[in-house]
Image 1 (tube, rainbow, N blue to C red):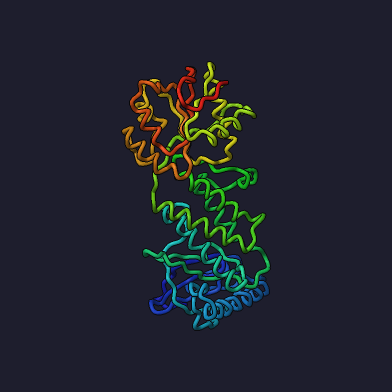
Image 2: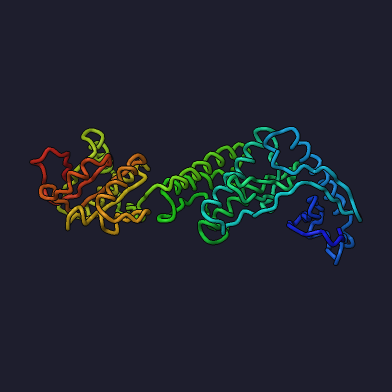
Length: 388
């Protein structure tokens, strides 16, 4: 390893990868046991026994990795260690090596979640094929810089009896990406719903909670990699579609009225997709609407609320109906809402002049559920009206 044509490529806490431009060479040099001198490595005095024990594990894992690679398709992304030898008590292994880049919270949004997808797919396939959930560090995983971004697992601890730390590492990387910091002990992330409105499509927000839960080390089992893989795949698919969504969705904040939510739900079920809520008290009208939203338990992925006091067209062009795509005109907003309705869409409209607003017929054609909050009694019309 002291030849001049050796180039260092990659260092983890366990090993270093070098190349002589023909072969890629992995050497066992744990940073807590080995010192690097100018042209070689030396074991720290007094730690020789510990080094020998861990070296045996390292060598066993290299042999096991090559064996698994030959037997299972899922392990084809592991190195083929064709030659293993020792020099000055340091083990070296020659193999092909695809060094490109690592998994980082600074990756682009697309790259970040695609790498999670590749990691989860590998773990799912390996556990399902071999019955082994190896201990792998994120530093042991690299990706090629091409369309497929092929994953490569440089080293895996096959025989360790400790729980795989990979789910913890991926989860912590996600939390750092979403919250901008490392998770703290008091965060209780597993019981907190992610609130990242404006950054991602709300369906992605929902899936992120499922993905984080599947990676929760407290409850993680090998079969959870199936859930992680399926969820990461759905997230990647949604990102490719780049579907429109509301940047400022309405969120219920008023005190719930227990009977009201059920009454509104029954009205929608029996009378179609437009329900009028009539009361002389504006505050009560929003409490009724919020009660219904809480009653539906996530039926609607998209919820928007606005005032049509200056006309429905102005309402759709207001901040409340700001879309990720940047669409501004009322007709464009209606078009986006039509596409969003397949996920469940609720519109809450206050002060709508249903008699004189020419745009009212446009919203009636939307396949969305519509709540009209009004202090005027429209009993003479054929709409479903609930009086409070």
